[in-house]
Image (cartoon, rainbow, N blue to C red; front, side):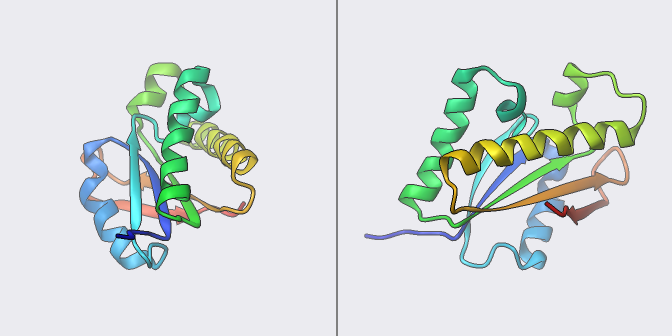
Length: 143
């Protein structure tokens, strides 16, 4: 029996994102053909600054999606007010946090493309408009 999907979403495990991400997935048009999900604290942060073991673990999960499920696109979603980043860094402003996370998303993109050069990658920033995640704006970043 064959089971495939077109997309892989790498997102943060933060529970505040759950409802908004589900709604965004349905409305965005990025996820036609279904999607796998990798949910980790800090999203793809481990590809930018994790140990080799953590990097290899995340990339092995990407392999399952791309090789077993034939995913053709990876959507990497990071968000503001991320606890995983707050544990590692002291940001002076929300814009500084966003800048660092975008830098890390680009490093993650490079790591994935090194292993899967034909995969399409979309980088997404989720801006929490309140501390509870009741309102979140999603921005597709230009690569």
